[in-house]
Image (cartoon, rainbow, N blue to C red; front, side, top):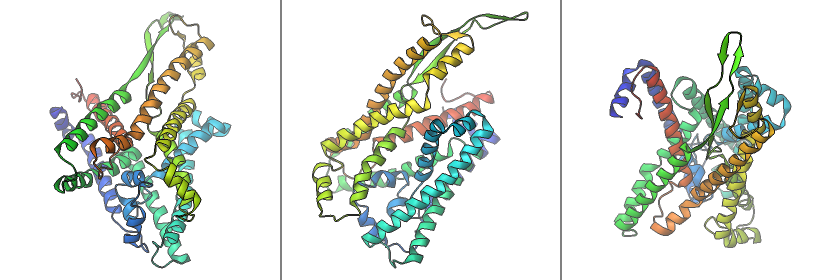
Length: 421
């Protein structure tokens, strides 16, 4: 592996891609420390001291709690992308564009950018109203609201541009790497917080050891689930075309265990945050907020059970959108292939759907366990300053694996040894 890292800097094209990606990371981190004008930083910090917006602060690299230019991070773009994926299945015109290849995907990408601007502006306006009610706006007036909303929207657009530039001229998926950089940037502050707890006598070496063991086990589980797949064997019949014989080879259809990635967690988290968001507009001592705090707090049993059930539901929902067993079975039949022991056509689709249903259940349960993991870690280790939860770890490990595979493919193309022999 050390030799492979050395070869990265010897390949000119790959070296330039890596340096460009690092420079975009630098721009991202600088923007994360540029404050939005007109915001009371102390009031903002106290307002976000709870667990409601913790995950969004983690993926923004602390920019949300500081309320800097990149406070909304890339979440409006992610939401716009998810909405476009759903509309691609529902709207026939978008489905046709998706099937037209590269040109059609460029049009869908353009629609996604427009949707990002709209969603970012709506989210920024909503945040202005909530901050004004909480007293975090220094001089509340229309001009101040407009400056804050435009600044936040511009920050999201800049991040979207940075992500697309990394994808085009850097290495890896730009949007995923921005989230990756935001999460990783919080690790030093988390380590410092744990050190302060250790120095203050709040925790001991046993707690730190338990935290390290849990982290290693979770990392191994995430790697295994991300790389895990069920390979369905496919046999292609021999065909005589002219004087040449085609087909006859064996292949397989890979079905990933965690095909939905982290999308179901984002869906479920957005839905679970909706009641608390509504409660922020109401009287803190009112009946609605009292019910939420007493029976539906982020650490309650009811909250975690519903959260886990929603993740499993959205896992099935998202996999059903991105994978159609009928289309896959038709493509296999069209190319002269078949699954041994299964008739082509509808029986093949039913067989694939049966296997996919079992894999999706395993993937959904795994995602649910990862999402509720921080509550169990806090109970076992008593470490309160650790905000690097299971969802963040899932994103970091997944992005790191995908980026490493892309680097390895560049090395293999140039006949260098990859990371894995």
